[in-house]
Image 1 (cartoon, helix red, strand yellow):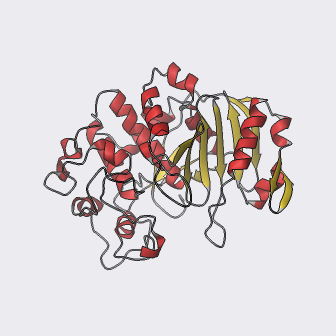
Image 2 (cartoon, rainbow, N blue to C red):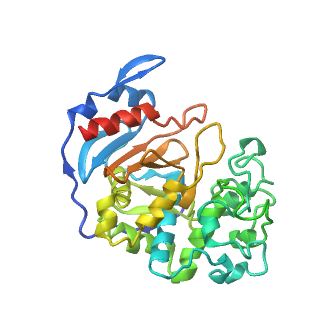
Amino acid sequence: MSEFFPVGVINKSSQPYQFRSSPKKLVENIIITSKKGTATFEDYLKKLHVASFIVVQKGNIVYEKYFSTLPEDQNTLQSVSKVITSTLITNLINEGKIDINQPIEKYISDLKGTEWEGISVRNILDMKSGMDSKSIDYESGPFTNPQHKNYQLESALGVLPKAANTPSSVYEFIRGLKKDKAAGLAAEYSNINTFVLGWLAEKVTAQKYTDLVAERIWRPMGASSNAYVCLSDKGVPWYHGGISATLRDLARFGMLFTKSEIQNRKEKLISFNQLKEIFDAKPIENPIAPFKWAYQWDLANDGIMMKAGFGGQALYIHPEKEIVIVAFNYVDKDWGMNLISDAALNNIIKAVEK
């Protein structure tokens, strides 16, 4: 991504976290059974053209494979970036700098007198702002139709090609948005919500996004490599999908949501109550999966929380069992996500526990 877009650096720690390496044959020896037959775990990942894959339990790397990337490569996280942005917000909530139930205009005065007025921080965190109902309605053209709200957001940021109606200011574009429906009625996935969260974090702290991620997350967790976030030509971060990081550093980030890490950090980044809200959120009716999007997380069921990104990037966390799984991938010719199956995920969890 840094070869195509301007970026801002998220600085690593001077004292990197030291993973322990304890490979488990039980993970390596998993056999995946599907309608197409059986396959070894490695062959299964290769068929999904997974670029790299890691499984961590309590700081022990029990499985790690690099197929088409190197350990030092900073891979695009795409929408997995959203939960890094939302973690900044939970951190600021837990420090008392943000009241989750207050309307957004209390913190971003530029949104006073707009249709954002009265929408709570909670509703924006949970994708319930009501400001954008069609970001993942592909028939309406979120990535191809210049009239689409998502297209206008991303063309203003430089993610998508500029069109005749591309906003000159992404902030003015956000200010001018009209509601699709009342806030709080429905969880609807939208990059616009995450953009407002990033703007909120910068407004409350008077700091740049890159510095906030570095100071509050990346350096304290012991990141071994710099990460970076893509920027618009005016220096505005892609809060919703612009971060690139190494496989191990994203796994380390995932560990922050495990039981022992939450306790050790005295619930500063994420609290047990916030974690419970993520799992307790009511799933939406959807034929693909029981999405929740509470605190920007896609799924939280059967003890596992998950956030995926375009192309098949995925972060899975079992907070109670302290297991973190990260996969980096890329889109196939049909633009498929190629995520690992629920059966494969359950096989990994069982093998790690043994």
